[in-house]
Image (cartoon, rainbow, N blue to C red):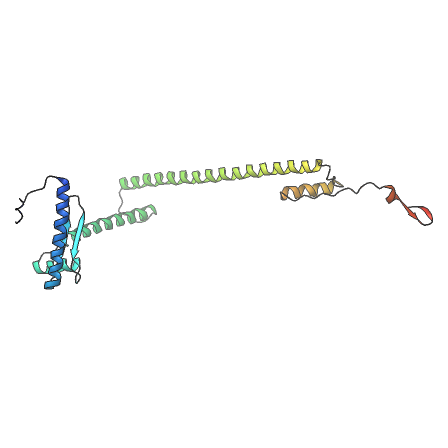
Amino acid sequence: MGRGKIEIKRIENPTNRQVTYSKRRNGIFKKAQELTVLCDAKVSLIMFSNTGKFHEYISPATTTKKIFDQYQKTSGIDLWITHYERMQDHLRKLGDINNRLRRDIRQRMGEDLNEVGIDDLRSLEQKMTSALEIIRERKYHVIKTQTETYRKKVRNLEERHGDLMLEFEAKCDDPHYGLVDNEGDYESAIALANGASNLYAFRLHPPPPTIHHAAGFGSHGLHLA
């Protein structure tokens, strides 16, 4: 019993429509492959679904570009002329913009002003004044930013110096450390404390003399040191 004929019209159900598209697309690609193998034909198929999804089949012995070139040669239709003209028009516009910018640069440098009218000169003066204000504003912003950065660095150094001085004074008050001998050594210790965070110069006082250091006992009795 054969299958009944299907009426050729748009399938309203989206799911059935997608399933039918996938099945028939694969069937067409299979037929194109058979034509390529059996008949040594050059076949190119380009398909877009209703959702815009792209599918393509091209015979292994050729490329899509070669197919298009052969089509143009056979039919006498140039497929790229419109695109070429559009590119040429865009290139002309870019050339005009480039020439205008070059002329503006020369005029701002004081050149090519012989044929410039008084209105154009006033407009050029206004443009240069505006550009100067923008440049000056940017320069002031850079200077302000650098100044703030250096001020932060100076504050950090001052805080570090204060911490070092506090640490130095704490070391001086520590009973395990003696005071320096004279004012010159004290200034040297201060200079070292300012220059390095972990390096200090101290001189310990010798311990007070004891009786063993002040006098010695010998075989002949007591002798003064």
